[in-house]
Length: 277
Image 1 (cartoon, rainbow, N blue to C red):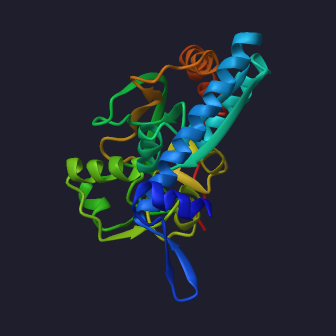
Image 2: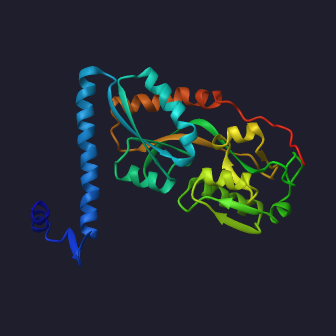
Image 3: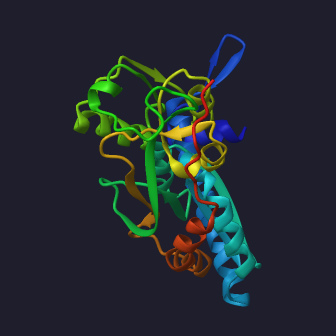
């Protein structure tokens, strides 16, 4: 009855019947998107009232790009220790989805690498973010020797799915260095790429923050590829016209002042000898 009432109000169908199945129409999907945004804004209003009464409390919604999931928990845990009355809601997405969530006002801030250029956003650097070419233990190009673009052209490269910020950086790197891989293998996550590289399926191009344990234990090692490591930055990002509430402002300032120290305090990767045979 409520859906029929909405149909009459809008003048377009929200749900259509296909045989015995119901399917949400494009109009229904659009209404649902706006409803989610309204729901988030109502939650913001509730949080704002709580903050007015108690200071730094309430809710902050944080979008985390998939590569940052290796650094974000430490950062957000340290923030919660300082502001125990703030509730942090975390969602994990690839870069393109983070852009959409910012645009639709579904998150307050994002922790990500390259900020969106087309979307009006404020972006603040809080830590460095190195990316390297990695290979399995015992790989012929490992061991610290100089590697050329021609050498890399004989190798298979593992690459993230479309919409990933790591993929964008990797594709730019290959073009800039004139590297034409013998094969490109697309995989849907950093974890799968790590396991595929460990198994010898190809070379990985990953954030060093995603594979510190593997680098320490030697199951993955850096390739001395030209132009690497590529040092990017971690940013805290939010819409430029968004009125951040005190809890979100506190998180932004915390990341800007403490984020670099906390990221760098994680156990740094070390160079271990490669054992053959």
